[in-house]
Length: 522
Image (cartoon, rainbow, N blue to C red; front, side, top):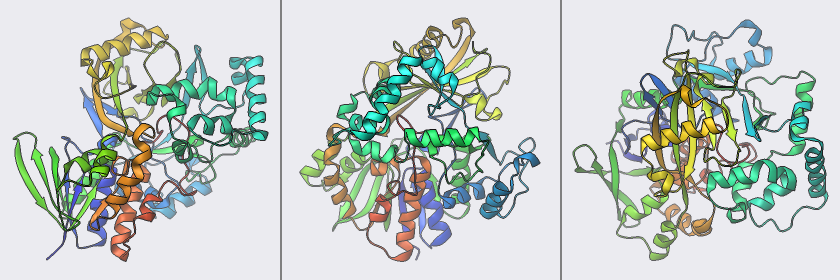
């Protein structure tokens, strides 16, 4: 009789685990998802024919395994011959064995190739993100501020802060005091809601890695010489990549297709199931209990193996018999940050040319953190191409004044703030939609210092695998979440009991990540 795996969460990690189990083992997965659709933070939400990407998700990875996995799910679009450089052609063929491509005008099941364009809006001016050393940047900053940025960076090269006690120390050493104060401090604190001195330096070590002023200078010189990277971009920091993949209908299309294939192969994906109990016997998980939200009925799901991508705080709270008091206490104080996305349909933007996929808002006096222009991600994300479909991103804590705002109040606030900073006319706002994401970002401050206690206990449960962003309380992008699931299945297949290689994902040099705030790639 086949073994059964109960998987908590139908986001990138949970669905990847389910699909990998079906491809490589005789284990049958049952995926339980509390939402009414799959995808987790990578879902696509529909509003009157317009599609919202919650948080923005570039499909790019340093891992060929992940890139190939994506392109097997959604084939690449046909590109013009001028785009087919020999390096790019070789890379695509190596991943898919087919460089012919699919025409997105006639086929929906397709992955587009996008060009990254992100900027910072600061002091009423636009700056390239990451900051580039162009005459326009220096002019916008002014000679005196540019001088201070350069001199403070050189000072920290020779006299870094020691010891590195927190995220502020980490970023000052990496970028210099003036650049940190100008572009990173206020925005990072807007995202996390606490001073950078209270955030662990471990977050910087995980998220910044190889990004530095020196690398930005080197990248700028390469571009000045006309050098271009192929799609693999192995030699480019993630924050500086220029091309990425993107499903025709947004990131949720990838996970809807994955869920379809899981069910086609005999697995189950059950929606609107909220896990309320995790039953333990003899140091193992034996079953989980879930509530079917539409009916209120409680359902029991016994299994042999369990994969959890649900928030660790909720997982520990659901365990019974109760876990040790110290583990309960540590889990109860784990910090999280909530996220609100406002989809706003407008007639037009005031700047005539805005090619941005993201715009980081660093103007004082507004709560808005970042803005997506969905038209620039995929032209198929918007119902009426003559309109502009925006995603406005706000960060908050559960239950605070922003979280408690009604949808109508949030939509009004978003329109007012865009008008205040001069990006739209208030009269051009048509309508909007609001999405609230609880525990969107596992945080690295306050109670995070006790996380090793929780990890040690959960890793000791032999048939439980923690995967994904919330499942590991690790601020991963979707490719890293997928890799944690793949590695967990690798361990099952190869008989490896240790969880160390799962935790090592996104800490090794191979998995280079970008700088601050929020993931450009989800």
